[in-house]
Image 1 (cartoon, helix red, strand yellow):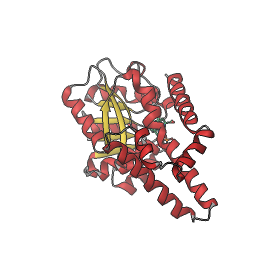
Image 2: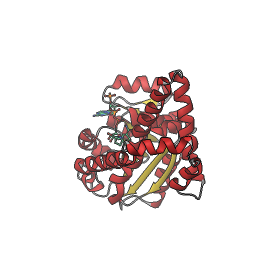
Image 3: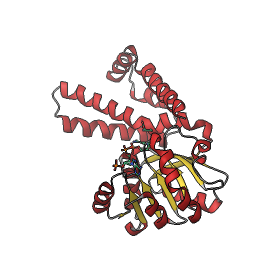
Image 4: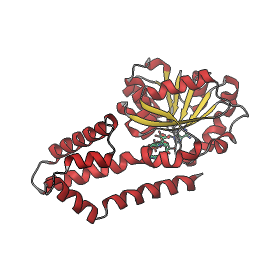
Length: 266
Ligand SMILES: NC(=O)C1=CN([C@@H]2O[C@H](COP(=O)(O)OP(=O)(O)OC[C@H]3O[C@@H](n4cnc5c(N)ncnc54)[C@H](OP(=O)(O)O)[C@@H]3O)[C@@H](O)[C@H]2O)C=CC1
Ligand SMILES: O=C(O)[C@@H]1CCC=N1
């Protein structure tokens, strides 16, 4: 059994991804702040709605509960489910930005199996990049069960907790950077007369292709960029202009701002 406390952007994306990967809908339980929101989500996806977070944890038992509420709401939710989770031996997975295992553990019983995860919104299409960090109380079998959940919604790695802030910026936040980039590509194309829907589809497919090439190639991204730039050609003209406008530096600054914000949340 797996439960999702929170069916918003990220909890919803994970639950949809797990279901799309073939999980039995009867084994996926959801709750939300507003019980009607959980019922609506359940009706749409086939998952089981719970009327409260404690009801959800009771239903999940010694399975996995993903806490997918905003960071400021996590402490209250953990304290609310603490007693039931302790009795059931539930594995608690927090996906909250910035909240460290030590901080989370303060709201749970000593020895409660606890996992910190950072997925991204592409989990809904089973293309997340997720980092996992396990507390000492998580058994190898429980670790495998958690890995199986995140493998169902994309790629995952186990990462030392000290790297979570940079991971969060690079994989948790960067889909928003990429959507912004695709939107800018679209705007430029629309300015030149292409219909918006067509421009978005073309730009998104080009971004997906480039990303897949990076993953499949032994060349670095910079070397791959060289393969597209003919001397005196159209691409290098565009790249020079992007750099003149501060493209690379802007990306570095954006990532650093997300890292700093994540560190300030803990
Ligand atoms: N959005 C993203 O791309 C990513 C988000 N995260 C993390 O995921 C977490 C959730 O973010 P996101 O999905 O964007 O937020 P949303 O605001 O979209 O969703 C929050 C969800 O939490 C529910 N909720 C709030 N309080 C409670 C409560 N007391 N009990 C049960 N459910 C509650 C809300 O219910 P209701 O609908 O009834 O209000 C809603 O379903 C955050 O901690 C964030 O750091 C991590 C990686 C990426
Ligand atoms: O910005 C947010 O709240 C979350 C954290 C990681 C990605 N999005």
